[in-house]
Image (cartoon, rainbow over all chains, first blue to last red; front, side, top):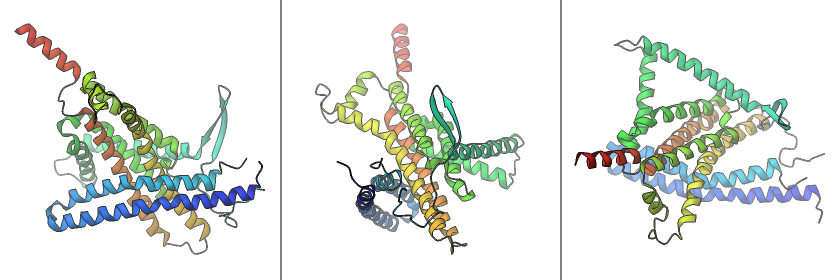
Amino acid sequence: MEFNENFILGCSAIGAGLAVIAGIGPGVGQGIAAGYGASAVGRNPGAQGKIMSTMLLGQAVAETTGLYGLLIAMLLLFVKPFTN
Amino acid sequence: MTPNLLLSGADGVDFMIHGIFKYSLFGHEVWITTSHVCLLIVVVCLLIFFFVGGQVFKHAKAVPGYFQCALEFAVEFLDGITEGAMGAKGKGFRNYIGTLFIFILFSNISGLLGLRPPTADYGVTLPLGLITFSLIRINEVRFNSPWAIWKDKCSPLPPWLPIWLPINIIGDCAVPVSLSLRLFANILSGTVMMALVYGLLSKIAYAWPAALHVYFDLFSGAIQTYVFCMLTVTYIGSAIGDNEETVFQRLFKKKNTEKTA
């Protein structure tokens, strides 16, 4: 079945928008990590440097799933895999 | 005509890799692209930096100047990354981790100088991930006996029931992909953001995008560099495990003790 190219591009844009919803998860996760990091600093202010680096490492790992969604969105918008 | 829905009317938005020079290699069409050029510029800058640094260290003074101070701090920091996560075993990996760190850092912050960061090209980050992957696997084989590796690969279940084996292998193979995609996507998202700001808001984009540069290029780039190196060190460290000596050393030692006994 042949589709109009504009139709495919519009659907790709909708798909890209849906893919970026993946950003919710990392946002929540990073917020939780930052909250626990802050409470850890409150309990033990001397270990701030170590807590900071551990928190940033965990946050960066948690960010990966959101970035996968972003990559899918970018592929849909700019590489346009479904058009000829 | 290919209508570009989102960016209609914005001619200045451009963050793609462009081909510069085309040649054919064994019948394949191969391009020299802008990321090659940016990579070359970064590497030349690094070479000059290392040459100057080497000269400074050759004539090192007891009371260090500014540059020597900064270099000593950098070397101490890079050694601290490896030895903090791996202990004394990390000694052999300091060179690789240090090189990796400086290279990725310079690549990431080259966006400040108007280059397209080379790490925003998956062809640059995937090899870095593959080097890390081969280091992990080689060191696993070097430090663990085959039986220990097999037991580890079947780990939640007993070794005579390898149902979990394929899942563990898939998890191992996902390491380089996730490492490289994380770096690539972070830097690419920064690049796209800056391209959108400069392309769509070109009439009012004076001075204030500098704040965005600080976040997307400096902060994000430095964090991702640190994360890449820390994860590499952690993965290698967990592949080595608690063993202090390689398998060969242990075998050799056993034979020697048998002979003396």
